[in-house]
Image (cartoon, rainbow, N blue to C red; front, side, top):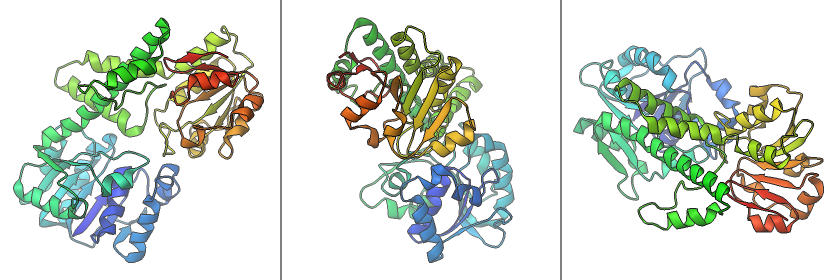
Length: 429
């Protein structure tokens, strides 16, 4: 099929690469906010496993054409328009769809893979003209494994009101639906709300577990026992029950805001969602508060080593990442920071510039330890899970490890001669 992909989101890049990989003729037209030369140098795209290689492979084989900044898709007729825009590009997206409708075949289908408010796919459908279809395909990709999630999906959440539209989408994605039936079809508006509700539920579980971790801290209980007890209940399960120092990321955070917007627009205020967001923002400072308590508020002049800046392992993005809140809190107290991240250093430098209290490292994690009064684990990259403990203890001046993701065994850390403070966990030498 001849497919036009429009957008500069991860969903757009992944769809363009994957659809071309299985033989569709794809034209990718990035959004003007981030053209191809910009995307090709962006850390979040180049660090996404397999994706850049697949994009180049598609171009070499002639199945994928990526339009440059001055180019427009005005010389072909397309059977599919795949839209993957950011929420703030919604209004412009309608105008673009109306403009591109002249390039679509009479029975073309628009696949709305953007996270827009509920009902937006209906509005986009009105811009297409008679005989054409519009479906909502929820963006369920995870950063750090987008290629795997697209090409070996656990499910496609398809919002579709017409059988003919479903048939066209099934043909488009047939190569990714061979192992088992992965399509879950429902009305368009239901699919749009389901996507937002899924992330709302996941965020609620995380925030609730963080609240329990805080209570465990107060009561002197190891929250790991509580987590295991909760997870063993089949009504609850273990997924997304890991307490931590806050969640972030562009998609997750934006989805929660979209859900809040939908609630507000419908005249229903969500006190629960407000609490989830408040708990998360509060949790981003939890390592700072533990540092404050350990040093009795005397932080000026200290040096802190930080492992991890990306909002999750496997990506270079720092959008809404806990480290940004943490850095502001530390700098406000005059704390010098030595930070290591294997992928996100470029994004941090671009976001923060040259700060007098910040040194950035992307080579050896141990380089940040020298002379530090504490080590904070913020992002659980695999390279941090099993450090050389004798070297770590020898280079860390202040014997304090603050584990924002609970990846270490408190007793083992204490046996190494360090004070351990996790999220709802602690141990002393």
